[in-house]
Image (tube, rainbow over all chains, first blue to last red; front, top):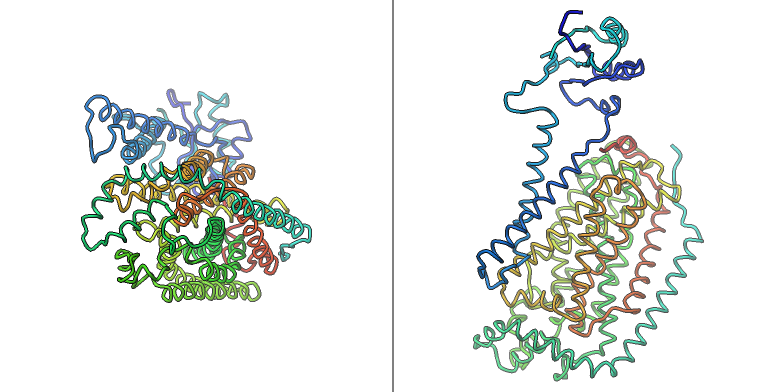
Length: 174
Length: 463
C-alpha cells in the first residue's frame, strides 16, 4: 500500500453490475462509503441500506419558522409598532396577513431545504468535492470504500471488488 | 389473470336497507319537529332576527345608502329588497310561500342532490383525466369512479324534479313578478339577468348538461368494456380522444352548472371564483370517495393489484386538492374581504356572523383544510389504511357541510337548521347512491384487465 491512500474504489461499467456488487460487497462485511453514478440509479438507496431522508421534517420546521416569523413581524409592525388603518380593517387583520405568511413560509422552507442539502453534501465555498474518478460524471459507476472504516486490507478489498464485477479497482487519497 | 368481480352481497344490501330505514325515521322525526316547533320558535325567532337585522344593517350600512341613491330603485321595491336580504319572511304575502319546514326539506334535497351529482360527474372527470394524461398508476382502479357515474341519470332526473317542485322556494329568481316593471316587487338587478336566468333556458341547459355528460360517460364505459374483451391499444387511444372531448365540455359546464344550480340561489350576489370553488369541492369529495372505496374494497379482499404505492398516491391526491380547495376558498374570501364592497360582502356576512351558520362556517375550514392538511402531511399516514379511512370520511362529511353552507343560508335565510331532517336526508341519498354505484360496480370486472397501463400500476412505486 502506498502511503497516504485512504480510499479504495471500484469502477463499474453498468448500473446492474453496480447494484449486484453493492449487495455482494455488503454481504462480505465491507462498509461502503458512497456510490457515485452519472444518473440516479433506481433501487440503489435500498441496496446501500440508506434510511429515508428526513429532509421533509426539516422542511416542515423551516416552513413553520417562516409562518411564525411572518405573522410575528406583521402583527408587531402593523399592530404594535406603527398601527395603521388600511382599507378600513383592524390594525391586526389576520386574513390580509395570510398571503405574506404563505410566501414567507414557502421561502424559508425552500431556502432551508437547499441550505440543508448544501450542508449535508459538503458543498461549501472553497470546499473541494470528493471526485474519485471524473468518469463517474460520464458513463462509469463508482463504489468508494473508506479504509478507516474497514479492517480488511487493500488486497482483500481489491479481491472482493474484482470478484463482484468491478472492471477496475483504484486507490485514492482525500 | 383470473377475472375479479365485485359481489354485491345480500348482506351488504340488508345493511344499506337498515341505514335507509333509519334515514327515513330520522327524516320523519326531523320533519315532525320542524313543522311543530314552527309556532313555538316563532316568537324567539322574531327577536333573534331583529338582532340579526340590526347587525346586518350596521354591517351593510353602506349598502343601503348606496342603493337608495340609485333613483331607478323604486321605494317599495327597495324595501322588499332590504327585507329579503335581511332574512325576513314576514310582511309580504306573495313572498311568504311555503312553510319553513317544507323549505327546509327542499334545501336539504338540493344540498344532497348537488353533492351526489358532483360525485357522479367527477367520477367521469377522474377517468377522463387518467386517460388524457396517460396515467399508469390508476389503471387498476378506474372502475370505481366509473361506478359512481351510474348515478348521473338518476341525479339528472332528481335535479329536474326538485327544481320543478321546489324551484320557487330554492331559487328566488324564478318568481315572475321580479321581472314585471309594473309590479311593486320589480327587481331591476334580477331583471337584468333575465337573458341567462330564465326558466326555459335554465331547464334547457340542465337537460343538455346531463344528456351530454351521461352519453359521454356511456361511451367511455362501453369502450372500456370492449377493451376488456378484445384488448389492444386502439381502445386506449380512442378513450383518450373521447376523454379529451369530455374534459373540454366539462371545463365549461362545470362552471356554468355551478352558476346555475348554486350561485343563482343568492341571485344578487356574484363571484367569479364560484365555478372553480364548486369544482374544487366536488373534486375533493370525489377523490376522497374513490380513496375510501378503494381502501374498503382492498380490506374486503378485492383489488389485490392495488399496492401501497397507489394508495399513497390517492392520499397525496386528497391532500393536494384539500389544499387546492382551501386556496380557492381563500381566494374568494380574501378578495371580497379586502375590497369590502357591500354587494359582495353580504354573502359572507350572512354566513360568518349568523347565529346558525357561523359554527358551520368555521367547522367547514377545520374539517376540509386543517384536518387533512395536518394529518396527511407525514408520509406514513398516506400509506396506512386507518389514516386514509379517517381522513377521507372527515373530508366527505366536511364537503357535505360545504354544500350545506352554499345552499341553506340563501334558501332559508335565518330559519335554517341542522338536525334529524338533514341527517336523515343525507343518509337516504347516501344509501341510494351507494346502492346504484355498487350495483354498477358488480356488473363490470373490477379491474380493467386489458388496460395497457395495468402492468405499470402493479409495479407502481413511490417514495
